[in-house]
Image (cartoon, rainbow, N blue to C red; front, side, top):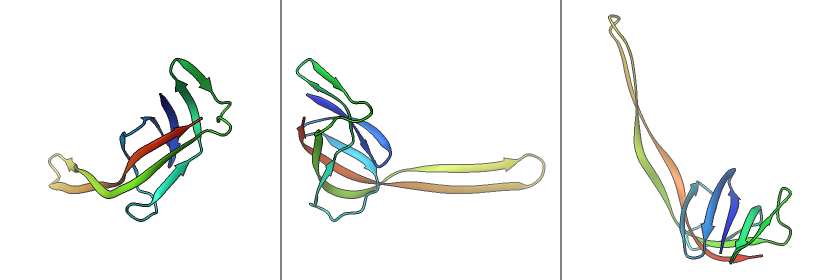
Length: 103
């Protein structure tokens, strides 16, 4: 059983007991969250497609931690001009444990 759910503007294919790194969300660690924007669900071969959302379908989970992603280096240079600029960025994520999918 899996579902495709919209979490903070991004779509994720989730199953039960799966860890998902979603964009940073508001909420305390160990708080429960529910996502009601389910776009598609598969229940043992029976696929339900929403138009655009499935009615009554919910995915519940628990916030495990707020983490940062890997560092991305942004390096700009213009040759023969003496211009160099180095910048780094670390995106913030929320680690979510998917506990249940209700159709």
